[in-house]
Image 1 (cartoon, one colour):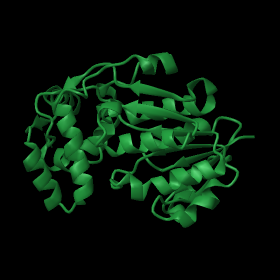
Image 2 (cartoon, helix red, strand yellow):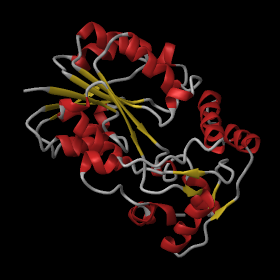
Image 3 (cartoon, one colour):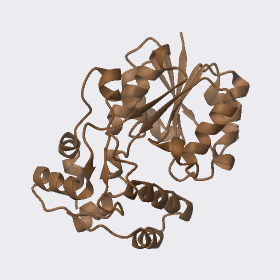
Image 4 (cartoon, helix red, strand yellow):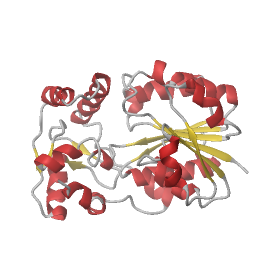
Length: 288
């Protein structure tokens, strides 16, 4: 029986991924920073074991990777210096002889060498790790996490994306694709670009949210400078803010509008729509 390590098992990609994999005849390790808080979350799944894992704590690597065949991970947003934060773990995967690493990267990353995602992909290839890169567009769930405060308090999308379009993708679709990549060897050593079904401007996204939530949501279209200053004033770490600014600059340049059919090809269905996402999270968006 194979064993998979899913890092960030309680996250908005990791948890739906584990939900899907728990239906299979495999062993699953949910790697989390605070295992004592996660045991109850995974109690319903008989083939899931919770173990401590932290990219910044190499002492957690060996136990989490014991007898593991395949590894799935997303770069934690706050870890912006891959050489220090991520490379030691990738080198451990090489030493352990892992059969496959599935990394959630970023669409268009091959053209953007300054992004942390590019550096991680490059190191995985240098180490000759068997891999699959999932390259999604911007997560819909960025609006229900990173940008939630502005939606709840100001009814505004405070995002420096200009008039550019984004092919938003639901993280539940990323999880579903991740499961297929782990379960089917046909995706080994491939890079899959996955997006939503359409590309929207943030003005259009705000209009959809207004319609679904029955509450006016605006798009204030801040400058990159204003966005950066505001995020820093909120106490968000500078490295994390700088990566966000870089990614939104890329968006302004038109690199987030690409639409692919990969979700349909892999899953046999259309991607989750932006309207469905807003409906599913409406209680959160409307919370004051």
